[in-house]
Image 1 (spheres, rainbow, N blue to C red):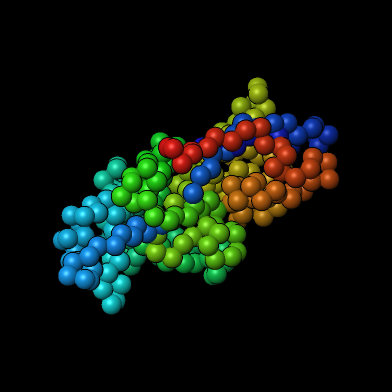
Image 2 (cartoon, one colour):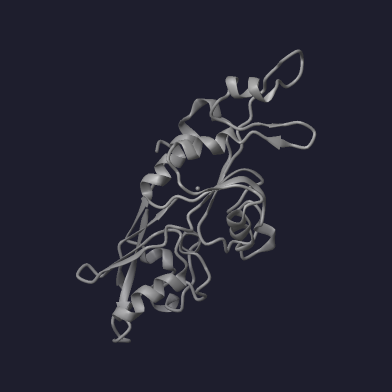
Length: 238
């Protein structure tokens, strides 16, 4: 996934910002299914048999089978993080706002567009997980709960997708959605180019652009979203 923004040369202050290439975006959830066994929720074995691709919450303490999260691993996703793991905790505390530090049942981190397609196909197209809910995180800078994270369910964390490439001839920068603006400037500035991006390096690219984006170049170039040439999207159809 990528987004295209106007870019300009940092070596020539009067050089107009030109268009970069494209930034890719995307989107957490828990599968629920009612099972009746003698008028109550069945055993874990029964639930697995009835709904093999989903994990279901059951029991007084909310114990989870995590079959849904296991389905993501079975689909070939290498980075599925679970509660109580160091990686899961590190990603949780990395949200800019404490309000956004929720507790998904697992976090999946795609590394490329095809990984995102696998996630979508697993969470959306599997009919046995029709009630699945999920959230999508880019940089994790949006402050309110539910904007980029979810309780229970699955959080799709794009943090590993942060590649920035520059096409000088086309005057286009292609930026993955998990990048933060510090990554973008760090890649473009040594080559003498820049984009009308965030004014703080810690802000994520995807949320900033989909929210409009107020940059230091706003008076001359408008909102940052107005400088996007194109987006690459993964739809609900995968």
